[in-house]
Image 1 (cartoon, one colour):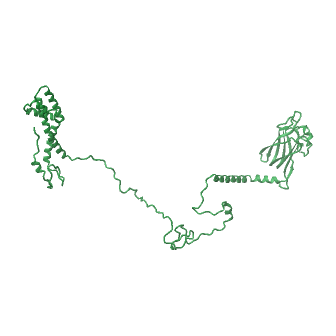
Image 2 (cartoon, rainbow, N blue to C red):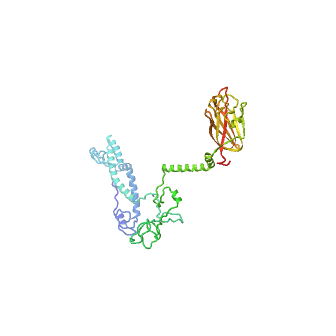
Image 3 (cartoon, one colour):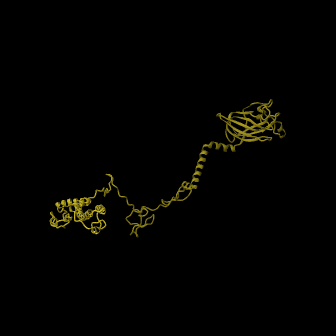
Length: 435
């Protein structure tokens, strides 16, 4: 069976010229080169049907080969020809479908049948003839198809002009001109501040921006208070020439010293009255001050508390209690508020050293001071184990009463009591201060 060949007459004549523009076209051309029109729709439909039939034969050639073999039934061939003929399984290449048919028919030949050899040869010839015709029709049909690509997402095109808010225009950045020397002013008047030449029509210098009409003032003598407060004692530098600020340890020490000085000044102002009295009392002349009344917790018979303030050293006061007499007291009272500066206490029964052993001597005495406003203050006086009067500083103002309380004693014994020969108060003299 032979394949069908195209007729070169009819299709070639119709496709020789374009029906739209009359441009000459090639025999196998599908579209016009000038206007792009299709060159003959009828031939394309026939070619598509022929291509479809060819593809069906190419896809399943075995049934067509068997039908052709049953119809043709050629004359039997000799055994030797089957081994060397083109339709045998051992000779030239064949299609996949033909290979299976050839393999089956070869099995039949080996079993002893001559009809299988003839059928195989006929199938191979039919497949070789149909395959070129199917490929030609498929190629022509595919040439009519125009490939169209799938639409791809397009990227957003940025606008050529950036959007801005309405009513807000972007102002141009100001151009700052650096001051410098101008060209062509070599012979111009110099600036009185920096000596830079300038144009005659300028009023301010182009470098330092100072007025050209004025001149730097000659610094005069500063007032005394500015010279005293200025510890550096120098002129204030210009802006840009000032020294860097100090932030080190010395800077902190300076602030600490200023804080200390300020604290001392505040303390001096608050305690100014006390300081004035202390200075005045230090240089004041002392004079004896006697109490207006005297009282005691206990008294030995014949040794009343008034004997401790009678200005005599051979009389004494005793509580009449043996040992140290801790807790016993003697008190001196003043009718008017009095300022006291010093106190002299004479321990024992006399100022003579040979009589010190006759009684116990006071060692630690607690003085309770009462002022005119009702406040009390306590001071502790520690005495020595010696004969004679012992002076102690006793500065107090507006005193109305002083109570001496015994706390401990020297040479305390069961057969001895504490004795105080004399207690004397001293205040400022009226000649140095009016009381």
